[in-house]
Amino acid sequence: MTPKPPFPSEMPLEQEIAEFERLKPQLEHLWDVVFPGDVEPYTSVVIPSLTLDQSELSKIPGIGFYEERLLFLLMRLRNPRARMVYVTSQPVHPMVLEYYLQMLAGIPASHARARLTMLCAYDNSPRPLTQKVLERPRLVERIRAGIVERHSAYLTVFNVTPLERRLAVLLGIPINGPDPALTHLGSKTGSKRIFREVGIDSPDSIEDLRTVDEVAGAILDLAHRKPSLRRAIVKLNEGFSGEGNAVIDLPEVRTVDSIARAMGRPAFSVSTETFESYFEKFERMGGIVEEFVERPGATSPSCQLRINPRGDVLIASTHEQILGGTHGQRYEGCLFPANDAYRLQVQAASMQVGRALAAHGVVGRLSVDYLAWEDGPGLWKISAIEINLRMGGTTHPMLALRFLTGGWLDDRTGLFLSPSGTPKYYRATDNVKAERYRGLLPEDLMEIVTINRLDYSYRSETGVLFHMIGAISQFGKVGLVAIGNSRDEADAIYRKTLDVLDAETL
Image (cartoon, rainbow, N blue to C red; front, side, top):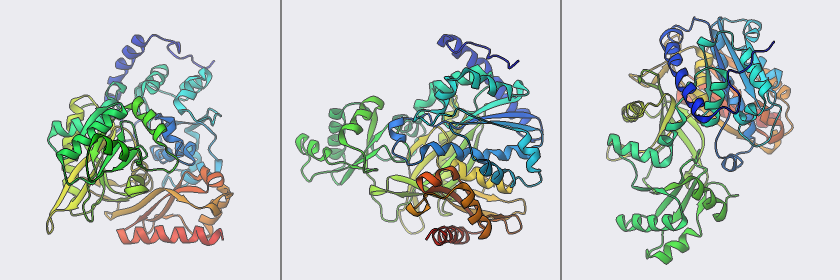
């Protein structure tokens, strides 16, 4: 008989929160005993739900297949005593699973597969996966059945909301992530408050706005504070990947009426956005107005952190973000590591942010985004932009590198070293996209990969790892991480991969 959840799905909120609190110490035990050596038995339950605003997510082609990005967490099965339960909205193609499992160096794919439970909601509706799971009590029971030892199990999610909290309580395991009561700290408004709390530079802004009139007033105030300002950015509190940003060109004469007219012509990050749809979301989420910083040669580095239940802050990686779209507001990919000139400066500022968040009780993965520009010969200035209190677009590429190499980050230098001691570099994106790729089945992509040797070589410690393979047939879109022993080599491998895909689909 499949074990029943410990509580009914309609449990009172007070009971849910109390049980969620009771589970938290179990995560500290995992960090103290299980994670350090990665040799103890444990079960990782992965629910790769993007529990974010669905109208914002709908702007991203193939968003349902973003659930495949966390398949890089299969690296946890390198521990021969570890188990994993991985849940998706739609089935993952068997060949995709085989592609990842055969890369677990030193572990037979059959052994890893026996310790992996793949489950599916069979529901491709545009709603969060966690919500779909909660609507299916028998699926919750199947997840629980896949957890062998509940005291050494935990839940991994993309971001934490009350939906994930409820699922964790129903499963009887803690979440390796922030309490949903703290997620406001990662909003655009919350980010600005944390930056001021720790005293690090951030573009001038006015926060905690709700209405169109408040936005107009804030833009006018900002323009008066900074007469040379040419543009302002309006940002949704819960926007992500730059999709929730709108750039406003400021008029020469700044009055209430001229600002109102300028607001009627915003530059959105995606062409499908309208004034009405954007400000409907703004009134629902709230947001900020921020100065648009324009500096020649400016870059956009980010730093990824992990905070454990003891409050220790750990550097996970730094990246250069590749931005596109109108005024370079949309995230399109990343380079690892961040520039030598300011990488350690970015790490130091991020540690300050991480310690402040830890003092508020935050646990789990997060990232901090910056602008960086040269402020004199050899002198770089950085300015903090936002905190993402969740996994993001730079999380899974680093997971891919760890998945393939089994290496580690040297936080003294910010470089990632393979077991041979070789520094690693990569270029990653979720957005390799072309109309001619449509119709390619996963089998076709695997054939192209095999024939053209677009794989990862353990001998040279270089190569390519694909992700979001399920999206290629319908959307002509796939993700990849190109890994080299230098930045130039990673770029060359990336370009070669695109050339091969193009040549194979002429």
